[in-house]
Length: 435
Image 1 (cartoon, rainbow, N blue to C red):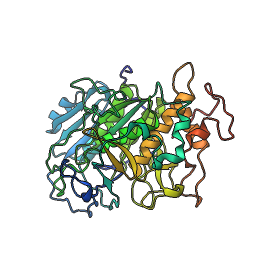
Image 2 (tube, helix red, strand yellow):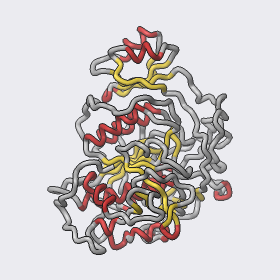
Image 3 (cartoon, one colour):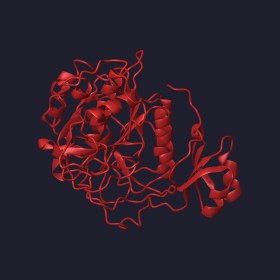
Image 4 (cartoon, rainbow, N blue to C red):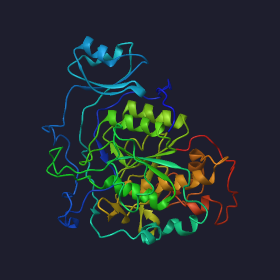
């Protein structure tokens, strides 16, 4: 656990921001895959813009604020006739609710950053399926499953397993009792904010006609990371509910908590409906502190979604059979690609799921960064930025050119095998932008 520190005064190069919905980037569900014993609902097909304008979650007048050190948000709220509904004092963050002139509040010298905390809905379709409840997960074959064959994990694990590396998974939570995760997950202390436990309430919270459609997503993502880097420690931070919905405040808080809990790598298998100045701010701080943030590019062909589109995020596209770009994957201004089709992993209740999407590919890359961070260690301390640089430098080029910047990740090549004789430990690689 790192000693908490306030959000530092690191400048942002861009401004502006949107109130957003956080939506898991990796997968929708195949309704035929539900065996009736799970709350998983019908396929998530996205929603036309404005389709949820009457949703109970379309709250108006929520303001996510970053305050100057020592400012009491309650004092601010009283002056403007607002209410404080959420507070994260470690980062001087608060949510203020009520009607206010945004320009006036933003101009208050006590307010460092301000953006709407309203919930909106992803308008693009997510044309994917995730077949749940496929039986029990075979621990002995997860690393050799066909979907991950290109990574040659069985050989890679002879050299590195992610030991000593801590990976924060900001998602729907995890099932820490799953056999694939039980010895690899470090749950937050009881009563901590954004508890990492994955739950399903059987309620259509977002009024979209589907119940608990994101349940199992975080457990599946964490399971992939555990498969790729079996000795890494997974730190679940729950920023999305069982319908895959969250807000700017919770995601920003989750990013900061990842630092406090000692994360070396942060996995964001989620997308937002627009850029967020507050999230940009938090991501820049993590970079400043030497933490690599890995983000799913999204499941709509074209440019990557935010936060993967942020230059300080290691963005990830998905590949399918034949080591080619998956037809659903965002691409172009994306750093790397990884397997993201029919990846088998854990699902709550000691079960397994087969998932498809850039969420899965993102988890693969987070695991690979953990492997290379161990490889690039100095005095036993993992170096995630150096690991990310190695992973990008020795990625396998993909055709057509321009699909992704560096290619499909190849951890064994980055370790110095397959013709690249790099020594293990103390590697002299650039320590700049690992994103």
